[in-house]
Length: 176
Image (cartoon, rainbow, N blue to C red):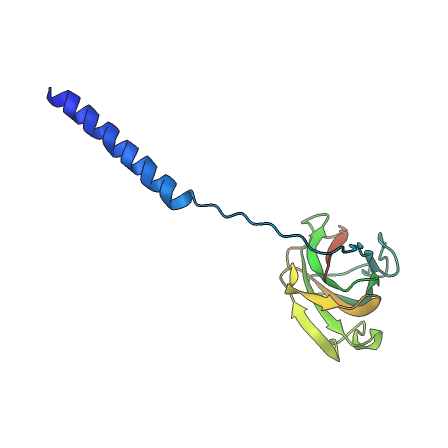
């Protein structure tokens, strides 16, 4: 008899819990309204590096670099289209770990702000050393170009006579 009451009590408790949870989360609202006609037009957006979507940046590098050596070059990034965009450097991917690199990126006011040696000048934003960068994407108007100053420092563990390539992945999102 006691087992039947325990089973019945458990069944009632489960039923009460199920009903209570359904009452708390089961609410739904629905409404509809009709509006006048509207035209929706998609925008066009492309992000270009050096005026190309698949830019081979052969100028970023050097021969005979040793640990601690620095390579610094400007790269023009253009947002082309008919809509403003939010964009950033999403990732930096080297092809090998045999040549460790520390990369930093800044946006400078002109190509002259990114000399081959020395520090960047006329910095507009940055520097960033963690990617994606900036953490909050930069919003720019359509048909805008910015000069990124990219600086790579060869790490202490770099092996001799090894090479690496670096892929820079930018992301752009259309803004309203």
